Length: 205
Image 1 (cartoon, rainbow, N blue to C red):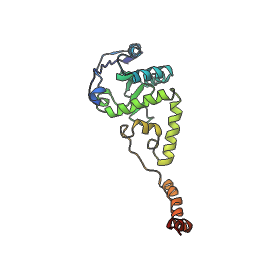
Image 2 (cartoon, rainbow, N blue to C red):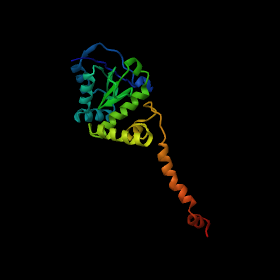
Image 3 (cartoon, helix red, strand yellow):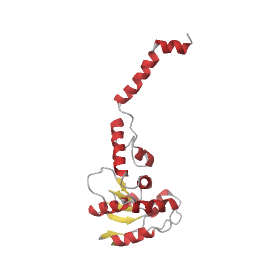
Image 4 (cartoon, one colour):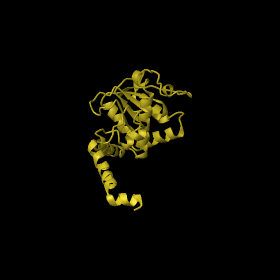
């Protein structure tokens, strides 16, 4: 299966941007990508555990299958992640999303290298997959997105997974509660404040 292999050695890079820099390498097979990833290489213990868990729970395999199905360019990255570039289908509409340890980007590697905060945001989603034991993350995420949409009209603002990964880092703008919900919450407060018995009690009468 044709794909692209890219090996990065972070070497203690200080800045977040440098942390996610990925040098170009010639195309190779998906089998070589898999071989490099399974070696894992030097990484933090937490990243190694996340990588192993997401391979074991099947979510990374699903991410690789999805990336291959739509013709993405696969590149291995630091911290056990796999970048899949130039995702083209219309859904989801986000500029990037994660399945297991696979991060699918609409942009190419040159653009992604300029957005280290987005990469960090997606890496946190990878960790969420591991905590959710893999594929159960998907229905849980969609449920959280539905709740957020009902509350704010936006699937991310009150989504516990997006908030946990960092709204700003993911390029989201937090929206307030819907006006109707705000009125419902404030109405009982107004009624309590206008209650004469409550006013007499608070005044010591």
